[in-house]
Length: 71
Image (cartoon, rainbow, N blue to C red; front, top):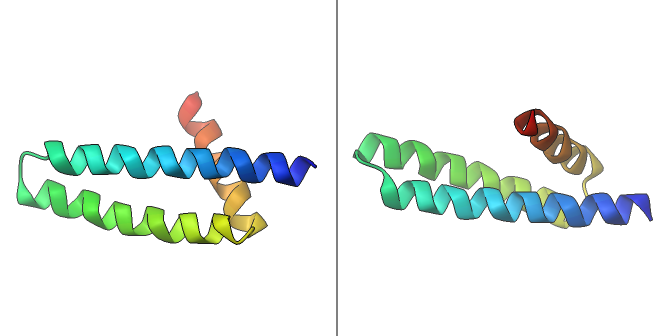
């Protein structure tokens, strides 16, 4: 049950990360900035795939990263 909850939370976090990156790409003032965010978006989609298949290392990494960002 705990892993199921972790999975649901990690999916939400990655989905929000992807949405935020799309916003940042739209608001980018330079092509370099947009390119950087597109690269980050590629990484986020890869991370999403790992989370979607239940990779516990990826799930724990997402949760840990989010916990650091919340402080």
